Length: 119
Image 1 (cartoon, helix red, strand yellow):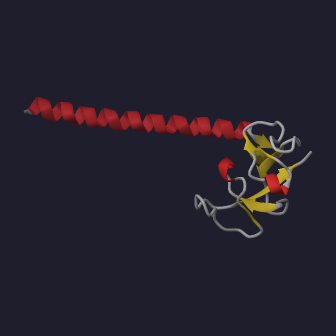
Image 2 (cartoon, helix red, strand yellow):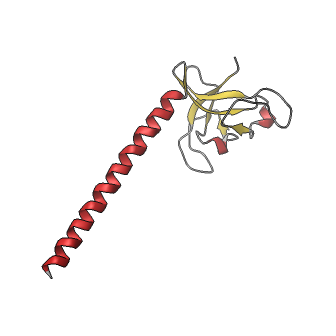
């Protein structure tokens, strides 16, 4: 009976230690990714078409809009004094834009101050 209790306790402790180690490694990867995607103190979220009617177009890399052929521009999180709109930080919600702070209607994330970096 003692062996079962000792083995169970060691298994639980090992499992908790393994989960905590994995959690820390994800944080490092996320931090490294964010630092690579910074442009002039602004954080790149996705690329999108600069046409208002094509704001639903989003991509993880630069390219051309599949609807009009225009060059995709970087949508970045910026400071409030340089922002053009409040937007959802999820690329799949690139169409969610507002003049006022608030939350995304689709995912309830806080809207971030954003702008399109056209140059």
